[in-house]
Amino acid sequence: MAPVKRIALLVFTALVATPLAARAEDAKPPASYESLLTPLLATGQTIIGETIVYPSGTPKVTAAIVTVPPGKETGWHTHQVPLFAEILEGELTVDYGSKGVKTYKVGDSLLEAMNWPHNGMNKGAVPVKLLAVYMGAEGIANATPAKGPE
Image 1 (cartoon, rainbow, N blue to C red):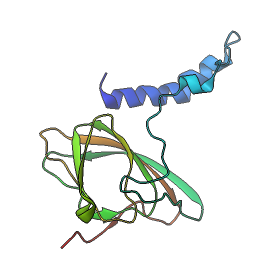
Image 2 (image 1 turned 120 degrees about the horizontal axis):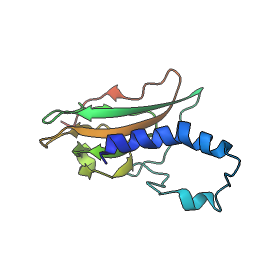
Image 3 (image 1 turned 180 degrees about the vertical axis):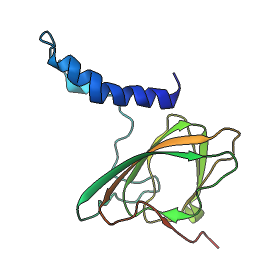
């Protein structure tokens, strides 16, 4: 099943099918909630070793599918809020300047660099699609343009 369709099915199941099934009279709670989980990531640090710091203020979580066409870049930018990402399609190469270059493939999950300039690039022949979940706050941008290394 295509990753984007898989995500849509998971969202449908979580929002519609699961609550309906839970209302059935013969529905029983799972023996262990933990047995239902498939861990993607568990960390307190970004991909470049920064300690995760949540912004103050009114919480605002934003989830989006980011699409980078073949041969395109995100442009140099930083995040002031934690960003969880999972690569759904394609392969994304991210330049972190003096912190190095990393390539992420389908199924890779990460907490992106926060206060460190970086640039995502699609060097492949197919679009890169990634699920991005920003754990931000009202009035704080999820990403801001930044100067790349000189």
